[in-house]
Image (cartoon, rainbow, N blue to C red; front, side, top):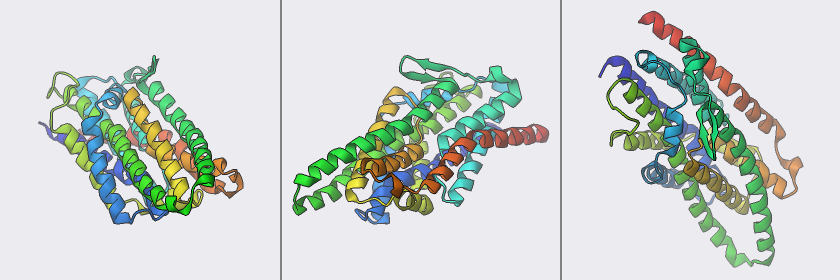
Amino acid sequence: MDLGLVIALALALAFAATNGLHDASNAIATLVATRAATPLQAIIMASFFNMLGPLLLGAAVADTIAGIVTVSPDEAVAVIGSGLAAAVIWNLLTWRRGLPSSSSHALVGGLVGAAIVEGGIHAVQWGGLDGWHPVGVFGVLIALAISPVFGLLTALIVIRLLRRLAHKATRKWIPVIGNSQWVTSATLAFSHGANDAQKSVGIIAALLLASGEIDSLETPAWVIPACSIALTLGTALGGWKIIRTVGQRIYRISSVDGLASQSSSAGVIFGASLLGAPTSTTQVVASSVVGIGGGRRRWRHVNWAIVREMGLAWLITLPASALLAVAIFEVVQWLS
């Protein structure tokens, strides 16, 4: 196994770890913000269910990600490695600012930027939709664009239903809400692991296939556990600034709000994983919190300045990571 491939594989695992820093933080943000769990308890729980997700739910998302770029085997490692490096750098920059950003957008942008500079627009599988299954870049972008809308609308509906039930509930149901948050947060962490760890699995499969280490996209047994562990490591390191942004700065949520946000986000991400549609946990969870404000008819209480900042970050992530990947690829070519 040559050095370039080893570095690219390490970058794939680094991407999974930074993905954990970003998106797994969102999986536990409302649980911590509503004080249903301590940060340590939430991290241990999320780490466990992040690990289970990719092991149990299959590889539909991995197959989608693996088919984004179609470059020559000789250049595949350099292209994919450059895209991964760009995504990792962007994830670290936005994590440092405590800004919820989409790791999925960063990965797609990085891969597309590096592929185009190497082989032109034909090096990218643009795709679209094959029935309900997303294919190529456009398919991934459609999934990424639609999922936050579903997150917002689902949370809006769920919080209104829970509020109606709350009118008939007595105070003895308060502990039940806290316990239910544990269940929904665990489900969200499981869904996140199933969707996001599989992105790194797909990338590693593409790298191994291009380098001749494997002869199909069927990954070796070590790949899924390695990506799960990397994602879990990122979760354990914690993204506390992002947790504060999602749990407190968008809209100050209560325990019932946290339950609505977690259950709606988990449902959207779980469904997307079954369809092989890559989603951004960051976008879905943040949008669901906005939906909570709307469901309570408190749009004015939503911190729209933070929402605009997140929206801007989501918009610039694709071009920024693409440009980073172009620069990194040129450096790699110059060094080689």
